[in-house]
Image 1 (cartoon, one colour):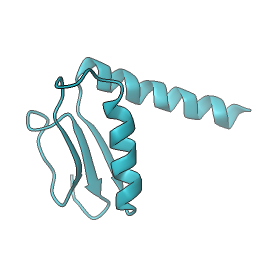
Image 2 (cartoon, one colour):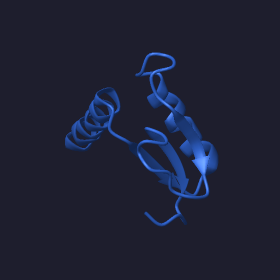
Image 3 (cartoon, one colour):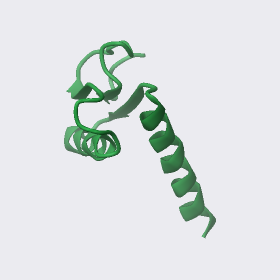
Image 4 (cartoon, helix red, strand yellow):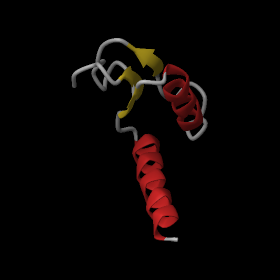
Length: 76
C-alpha cells in the first residue's frame, strides 16, 4: 500500500532529524496526542541529550529545545 510506504518515509525523515539534532516541531489541536508524539520521539534519543517541551503556548527557538510540541494556534 503506497500510503503506508509514504507514512514510513515521513516517519523516517522525522526520526533522522531528531537523531542529527535538528529541531522537530509537532503541532496540533489535541494536546494529549502532541505530547504523546513528543514522548515517542524522545525514545529515539539517549536520556539527557536533548531538551523537550511537550506542549507550549508559544514558539521556542531551536537552541532552547529540540523537540517542541505546540498548539495549532501558535504562529511560527
